[in-house]
Length: 145
Image 1 (cartoon, one colour):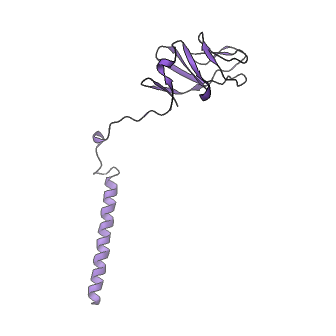
Image 2 (cartoon, one colour):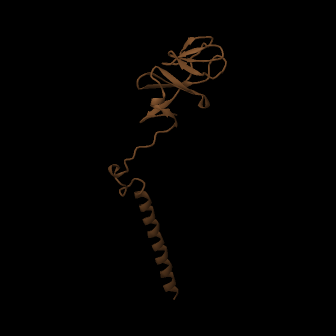
Image 3 (tube, helix red, strand yellow):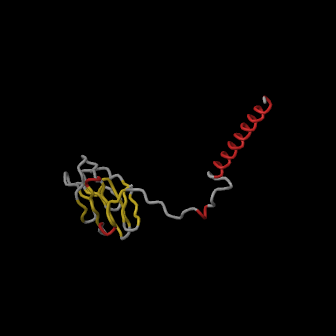
């Protein structure tokens, strides 16, 4: 009987080893080995663009822009289909700009004006441009990154 129980233990140990190797092979194949699906069979849904929706493209007038005070950003459309964004915080003393008119982004506190094309100072007392913010257009949505 001693011989029989030793044989059973070896069979169990050997069987466990085979299961461990099989499990390892299955794990490898699901992470890019031979069993992985070719890229052509992968789902083709595009990744959703990152960012928070601010507005529709139709909400931003050509040659003008819109101030989103709660987000501290101003979005402009200097030419049709070109959208730019800048911080809505004036670089002079930190007031929030409040309007976009006649090609400039205007601060109500001390009269600073910035170009809608690049945020550069058009009229002081500000001496530094508005920092650029990043937006993307996805369909008709303008997304703040």
